[in-house]
Image 1 (cartoon, rainbow, N blue to C red):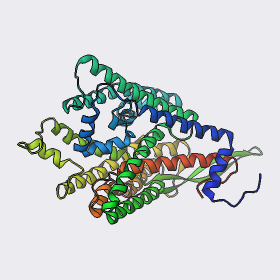
Image 2 (cartoon, rainbow, N blue to C red; image 1 turned 60 degrees about the vertical axis):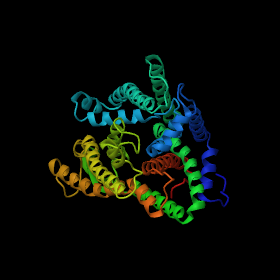
Image 3 (tube, rainbow, N blue to C red; image 1 turned 180 degrees about the horizontal axis):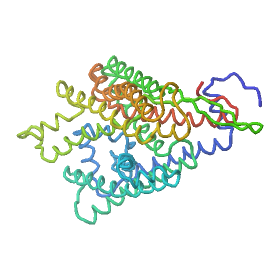
Image 4 (cartoon, helix red, strand yellow; image 1 turned 90 degrees about the horizontal axis):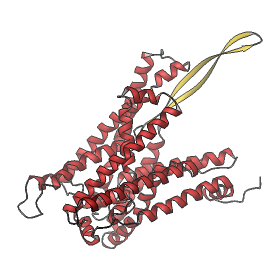
Length: 439
């Protein structure tokens, strides 16, 4: 191997990655598919009034945050306006149904073939979910005057176009998983969020001219949140495990033991609690919007509910929204962590493989011990997620910045996907005896 020149570690790792034909091909395929995704995000649906849509985004600040996850596709109301989120919804539903439905639970225990069957069911479930979500969005936009016609044929055409856009984005994600680098669905979401950061940077530049100190505080809090996310994403508790096995040597049987550990993540639930909590927090406001009167014209209970569940509301109403959001994230973090932990069945796996935790009896005692450990460390993960969830509110109030909309879930996804992709590139480099990104 040629001696390395004195270059920064990150730059050298990037050069090494592009010097390997297979890895270079995977990286270029991933970048090319992301370019295709960005083109699709700019293909508009017919029958949408762009001026009315722009005005709606000004009247409903929540749409700006949702638009960031679609990479601007929702603001243009393109065929990719829903992105891959119907697939995320279907995946979450399947994860919750697997331990409940015996047939699905049996499939999950059949190895690769069973997982492929569950994955196929998930893909079929995406179609009706995407259709319902697309139809709901179009009905709401028609009520707001953005979509001109609610006739059967135009509405059916638009719904089918949105479903096709979603399935095409999912197909692009699977191409990345198979031929590119990283998890394809996550990379597609990552691409959409990062594309929205340019608008945030533009908003920050405009606001900095009026409130430079507030913008500086806002972005310092955002930077601290990124560091916070990296620390807790990588944090885990190591549970020591020993394995006893028998080895025959010279016609005699000897017992040998090996030791390893189980890494229990502090944030086992990932971003799912944020998705659950945000969906439920949006639901009352969406329902109330169907019964609300225009602002300032005989406001009723629906107007009050819309204001109460508005993330952009000022104090003290905003304090209620974000405080309730904080508690819901904590609750969902415990709920989803326990669901995942039960599906993994670590005590049963250890017992079948002949492993045991030193000082803990196998079976029921191991299960109780692991439940106690996962409950204790989940407190750290739940509070971490809840603090990240309310970061936009804290940054907005401390810095007195109202125009910049930075999503905590967006930061969590971007940092998580970046770390996961870097680890995969790192593994490829280390396998070929190159130094990687991570020391």
